[in-house]
Image (cartoon, rainbow, N blue to C red):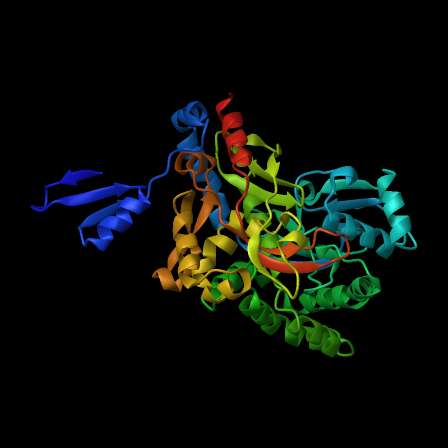
Length: 460
């Protein structure tokens, strides 16, 4: 603490000393609080080098400018085997690359379900033996312009949302959303899961493809901007965005497939998270536009596979920087508790990477009833993210903050300098394969992923 007499009366400045600050408040002593944190341990040399890099400022301006100017449009729905050149016997998954031996329970469950769905195995036991043998090739969704929620498993017969960046020309993909509960992405693989996937491949995907041929492209940037002003944060709350998407699609669905329209609309209407996958692909398109800018410290991917949490940085190509995935702290369903939870999993952190999700919780006060905490926590989470980001999104605005743009563009150097990690809100998968969803909450990425990326940028 130090005294300031500049305004004619003693005033105390407190820096990080919460106990002293509370004591002064109780005594009604005028006080100015400064929220300061030391840099992440062991980063001083690397941080100094990165901050001194003459390329950094301009490189980050270019990279984040590309992310902010992306104009994602939903243009099609097509089978993965066509758009991703995905051959039989190859599966993509969420997060950094991983082998079966290190795969978490929910990822293993999703891979087992995909093997049965594709007809590679007759049942779960046979699928497990097949996957353990190494005869199925696994690769990260992010390596193929794709993102997948939770386990994120993509197999050749699954239908994919196709998003085109109208500004930069890139494309990104994500599978169709199955709903909540016992679903493949949470690691469930029972008969009801496989039956639903087959219906999605035989009916839902083709109907949506036909509807988009009638309606034409759907502007996801405009839809996301509107949903934020209706109480969504576009990661764990997608109710408004899903409703807006239904408004866009419903007439075309009825026109293109009258016989299946009722079943398709009923399915979408019963799934408030249906928009999530489109929003994820929209985020992926914008983040990919910001890749490969030499000298840039902008994060272009955050992803988890249930074992590792990894990031990629614009100026560092396709390299992954990883640390152990943490278990979210949140609310649990039914009789489930923390002992049932798997470490964090999924590519849905592409929403936070692009300025949504945990970074936009101030726009969605109702989200706290799903992930825990109270409204003030949601607002504080968003405000804190302005400290580690490079820009405010010009289209994605938060009414409760005076229509301030969401904090967008995580900077590895700012994370290290402030010691503040990105805020992520997420679903929680059961740690045992086949369980499904057990809750939802908040989680922090491992600091070592960011310090390793900073060191690589610094060349140390």
